[in-house]
Length: 218
Image (cartoon, rainbow, N blue to C red):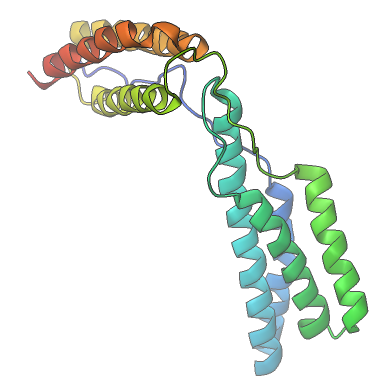
């Protein structure tokens, strides 16, 4: 039989496209680094390179924060992010702007400080800070830790199965697994929306996933 097409789960997470603007700040800094290097201006090269690194690190932190926020918004049941990447990135942007304007750009201290504050404030107004409230309502007498542990365990097992589905050459088995994964994801979504019956659903879901995982190994 021909090899089945790679499995594409309907709930696959898409990376956030927010934060692209932050990477545009790197373009003039990169040009400044190249020009300083061509002119053999070592001091300018070092300062501009440091400024570039600060903005690049800020953009990376923001991307991680945006993706973390996206997962938070998509999940009906989750805890607020532990590490506030967006908040850290906002102050990093202010610090990077201050450094670039004062040290690398030669602006006055207060002018650079003003630009840094404006950069941080602009980040907050445009992107906002990290979510702070846990989405753990409607749990009844069930502990949040138990619910999140169950959901996390199920998601991990499903992800492991999905990673190996692309290697299946048996079209019939692939089709059955595809349907099984869809059903399991639907059960998982139902648990997240109403976790009161999670003790019963957990036994069924874990056993259900385990059985299909064993079939996948055969």
